[in-house]
Length: 261
Image (cartoon, rainbow, N blue to C red; front, top):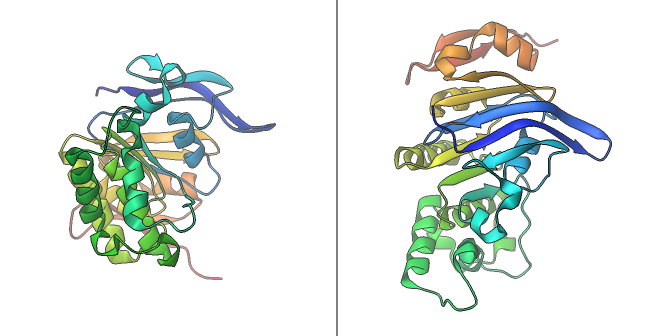
């Protein structure tokens, strides 16, 4: 396994609140990595550290052997595309205008909007299923539609790395599976995908590499078929379960055995 994006013994904190201590993780190149775990276990914080939105209190995050803090912002943005949990759009902005902002890392004072920029925006909107919304104000859209517009903006960035924090939030089940299928296709084209997911069965079905976290630590990582068992699910989620093969893909499927009170 090769890894260009790595975390080396990082401690992450917000003020006095420590989230993770001495955490190390290699993100395999050209793979779909899903990060799973209970709420407030440090999944989103880890992604924020990877994209330099949170500086480690100790340790360091590296891209190609160089600390991410040493890169210029635009250079890093041409490598790492990031979708946070709750992005906020400017008022009165239309869908196409917001998606076009994904091209900002590729612009400079001397460049003009190019056919490549136009093609990237059109392709991103089509891939995210929002091409028919291009002239709609973002504020008028449903939560699921807005989420797909933000995904389109990240796709328009055309980065080799895609980091997405709960990208299936607000999406109905059909759009969830369409998005995960799109991310898998991008992986197949050579992109590296890292996504925080809440649905363990979706993570097992679509990801090549699973990272299970609890209390700010990586409990287990590897191919879902190799690491997902009832003991892991109980340890990570406090959930009794049985593991059966997914009838469609053969990947591990978690079936809870917890009964209602």
